[in-house]
Length: 307
Length: 284
Image: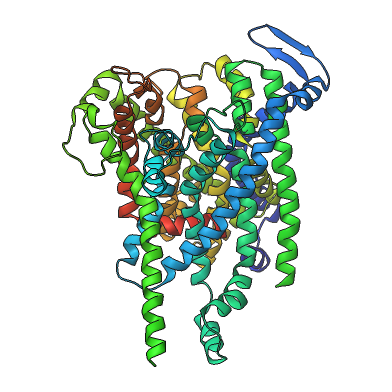
């Protein structure tokens, strides 16, 4: 670290006074960020934890300590179990789709062809659109009679499936919309990962007689693996936290078959105005994210060690 | 040799086929939003859909501007996206300078704490914030929203700026001499010019995220003085004569266009910087 060497070499007239002054300056410099984050993130989070042990509702005018009752109530709440089931489905399908398609798109955009820059810009468009716009447009796209998706399916197969009123179809509708919106982001990351692989490796493989598929399997994938693993963790957490697409496309329905936990928190907090219970659901959400983060970090370390 | 040439042709055809399918999947839905926004009402509900415009109607845009305070929403959106990014970068630069250059006890705690706080889900902080905002009368104010928009940007901004500053050679600023008085000129005249390209890419990314924000205003904005353009989407469903879907999709599509055009323009103009910004956030 360069700062250390400077601290050692410079002649210091009044070491204590100067060191103290510099320290105070440092604290003054970090103070705005720290205070801003403490008041808008850390404190409200701790307060949510506290509220989760209360029966607290501004409508019923209650603020009573009830211990773990909110948490116990969650285990019996079919909205929560439905939400957890969908979260699991959503994460597995959407993350798998995004990783596979993201790798494919990155590969396409890494080839040399005319208008490549334009194609790369087009790839960014779904990323740039607001999630709420994507979700709202998807309502229209998945409409049974006049939607874009059913029009294409009808032209191919003559069928017009119902999307948003069937549990499984609604789940796929949310998942596909999410994958459309977010795969390009991953493709950008993987593309820059591909560009970081030295081309000599591929040339050496060519001399050894390896063709495209083999060198992809033995060179590209292993070198991208740490990136694939870390991005899987990252986008898994983002899937668990997502809100807008469900809010706009299905309202969590039919029933609560597509409601993610953020949406449950929003409903309980700002529609039902059940602050205590909503806080408990929020803590469950935090706990899930924490577990994914810890497990993911462990996997990531093992991946790095194997390299 | 013929075999090799044939394989190359087949490979090329296959490549362009895949590329074409990919482009179609991305562009068709976007094109269809545009088509819906500019189609006269009676052409929205046809079976099968018509993919080419038979006539263009712009009165829908006049309708939504008449029915909703769109201009005010746009202003609020642009203000929040710009101001939150600038403010977050300004305070983050101060903190990042201290973290990268001045040694002080607790520096690591601040860095790790910031990262950890960025893991806290928005929905796990929103209820106490809502109560706090009601008590402090920050509900429905641009200042209140600004604080929340900016807050979310701080952790990543600080981390990226620290990594930028560590790449700036320390000789050019002679950090040993820094005290409170010389700090701001130094940051402004020496540090800022060096990291300006990095700052510009970060600004673009944060601006787009701020422009697209929906959850924060959904909870904390109540009226035209603080509502943003993403909230006009659901409001547009309620204006005009209701169709069989109780929603005029043309109006919704028109708002979607107004929301999307600015970020598309930015994306087309700054494709390279945006890609750089995305990868900076991930790899640093």
